[in-house]
Length: 151
Image (cartoon, rainbow, N blue to C red):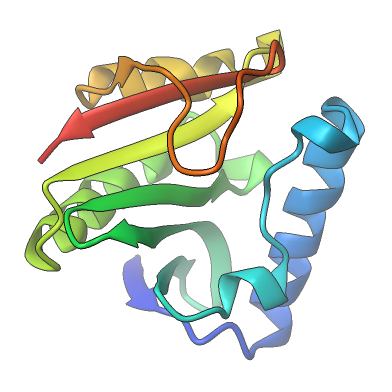
């Protein structure tokens, strides 16, 4: 398996992300769904990685620059048939290392508060993320949980 910076031009990653956004919109109310679509992920200040097993996308994630020292983790996803196989851990470790190399001293994230998101929250806790107040342009939301960690 390999992790690559992805320019989001391929059909496979487009389908992978469409499924991601569709799933999140089915779980959370529209005002609480903060997943970025392809156009959102192509904006300046965002670096996106795909994890590939051969030519199959098995995971993805991104960092969005908030300011010179603070980034937001976005679009973390593992293929449904590959969950609980270490993909998310390997990808998150890679992304945090890359964020550190980009000069960020802090990475924060927003995820859901629903039971569906519990495995994600546990993963982030294992990687040293702690709970925090909303950051960036987020507002308090009973459907959202905010986490952060220093690099």
